[in-house]
Length: 238
Image (cartoon, rainbow, N blue to C red; front, side, top):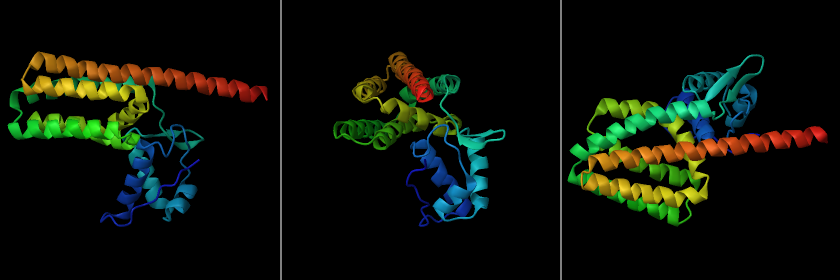
């Protein structure tokens, strides 16, 4: 069932881009659920547009890996699979370790201040009971400063190519409220290691940071699959 999301007509973008951004954000924020069918007519009516920009948006979302085209069924929101999680986080881990390595060597005093401010903001958002979206965005802002501090534009581009997939996994990880305090602690430790330019420790901490995310999300996927299977068995009995 589709939730309450609308096209922001105030943005100065072509309609097809507005529709694409709207559907992409709805998927990333979980307003369109994994496995949910994307019906062109229903989406067009909901967003007050024709089917053409809906169709174009779905094609672009398929290229990003956020939508799957299923034979005789049509488009549906891609589910978070363990294989996709593992593949994405293996690449992310390697890129983040390299970014951390370079940041330790190249970070400026100004960027260190920015990273410290981003960590302070992340702590405040978590402590104030911020929403999953707010926490994910604060987490993303923290990591973005490390990427920038690497001074390698090609590396930043490669990480940005994974941004949408990474955002989904961030949200999935942050759903577990018990992990938010761990995130705060990990961010603090990474910041301190970069501040004293302890390259080996900073890279080790970043690897553990990414590995913890993969382990938690993998466990969540198993639990969700078992819950769905149990619900299916109960419904068949009735």
